[in-house]
Image 1: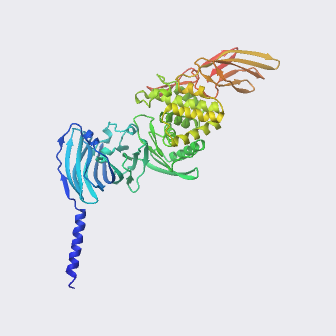
Image 2: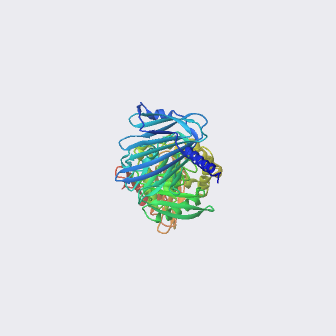
Image 3: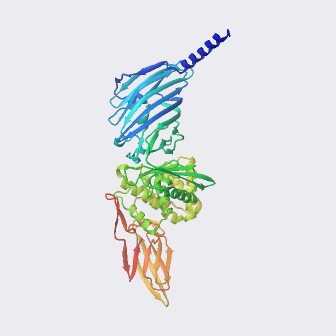
Length: 562
């Protein structure tokens, strides 16, 4: 019984030690800010601190147009010498963050704070006195996402905030840090009726969709957008390349979306390489254009499924797995149009899109996707480039073409293919090695110029030889293109299709059993020909307009330019 006081004292000492271990040494409240000319520049001048562990806990509410975020940011460091930890936050009419309290333990701390009219900056000087130092920041943000017109990052163009779906940029839910390490973000509460998701910016400048685990994201310190939407979540598993791929759709369009996504993945995988990731996540998000989207690393972000998602999914091959820079767009366009039930009508519409630009620019002269000239960029880079690949498929044949695509993907997965001319030369070389033929003429015509072929029948003669007819066609091309168009001769009893290489001009002679009724140049729309489409796109109305197709008659035989 005499030993009891010693035991009590020991327990009390242990409790006090535990309390001291978790008791902050320094508190900062009611922080006073000094005026600065450029707080953001001061922030960027500070060195990045590595090896940090950062945990962020958030409570999010949304009423009307206003989001309120209450957060606690805890930073764990293992410093050996003093450093300055900078914290940057915004204060504007639509985004206002209030730092309520800062606690520091395991270190001595001194604080300076600056404000330049928009950005607040806190410079926290940490002098370690223990092996582990902890900084806890308590804050509240008031944010109006539907009124935010700032574009802090390109992906924000694809995500127009509405009451049905909106995003929170990092600036809205946390003080921005100059630290690297393990980041864990727990969203403890968020608006009822909304689904929580994330969009992570990778070091490659690509974006990866994330679904939280128990409302928690693990980000590695990269830029994370928190997404909230009134979406249903649909899931499906599809077997591709010996593995099961999870297909997930966050959308209000219906469960059919995951079925279509699964079909697309299987089709693309059968022609290219098997889908390279373990899951594909599609997020429907209203954009600033009626038909807009963004290919993600393992997913797709789009305003709608139809006419957008097949293209964005193709970027998982051309963009995420193999980055070809601006050439990602024509390859994704080719894949999404050609491999998704391409009908003659859709091919004609595609051809019409090629001719819908006001100004034409060769693909090798493009330095990126020019938003200010998006109609020209779309017509020249996406649609002309994609149609050029369709023509290339016709020239070298299906087997060679898709084998060449697979090799290009594998090569560009492990090497830098972001220089347009070098990548075109690489692809040309791959196909030349497979065919044993020189294809330089094709690549020069379609990627180094901005014009289109102009094929026509310059003359026609028809001679009857007993029970047969001999049709002689003079075919000419006026814009300096050398291509091997198909020619279809239609008679009452049969259709005869021939291929002829035209370099300036060529003569085709065909024998038929009955008198020809019609001659069709490029009947299957393999080549975008100047007079070959019935459509043009009116960019102001975003609608197709019907135009008169090139047609003539010689010796009672109709000539149709397709």
